[in-house]
Image (cartoon, rainbow, N blue to C red; front, side, top):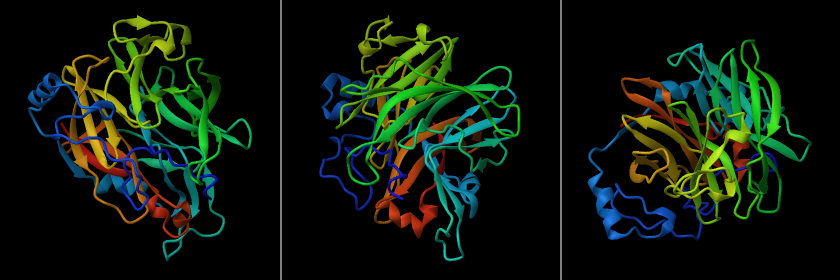
Length: 373
């Protein structure tokens, strides 16, 4: 089982389980300040960041939406959990590694269970139940490769574009023995009972590194441009970088923020903010741009007046300490799914060693919160 269930947490960030890392946590300061790249901010930046903390956001649990992920037959659990609105009012969901099968009365996986590297779900409206489907849309190129999902965008004519990460097996402990070897853009048609994959095209801007740079951790459509946020993985931290294009599938139109201006060279992309996870969300809040990401067991928001940063951070939620061996990772906001309690915020949960999922498959499901800025 561990061969198929790969962890997407950052192994260099503090874990929230018995699988503790020897690496110390990033230097802590008041909740309103995030120290980027584990280096102290200059005092002037610290004062500016503290002055920016004018309000404390509210985060509460969402048992009602959580129930949409609680199944005992078919789709049983997954991570990833990206969603985006479609033009017709529906909401489309995409998941990465997915357990399928059935759960017995004792809570354990029953014989015949399986593992998919990706799956999907949908809502008729943003207020409707989310229905996950035990069905993989993006098969790997061979038995040693697979796709995990990243951000997507709904388009005209019942279509959508989705960024994918291409992965293959590698050396390392079971559950962590994988590496990314590429990126792709999938074109979907969503006017039938089952999504139709019309094409999967390599993304030329993926950089294998070192350090590797991947695009698609979060997407934001703003004033005619799509901002494509990515991560550059240095091992002990991941940097946030950003590209911009009018159309996601026009690779020649992508430009990359180099710290001063937009460049046609992806290798010139400059870090624009704090250490982040490899899955996150970016949205607007009033006139500001907001990144939601997870560091260890903490969920942080980082705000800026510009989509290119600089960003000032504030911790918004401390995930409760789970059972021994349980890991949480890759929080993200779903701003199009909201009610009077706030916007839906999810984080992923997994367990190590992964063989424990045979007895407790319910541990491998997104967890749901509501976030009110």
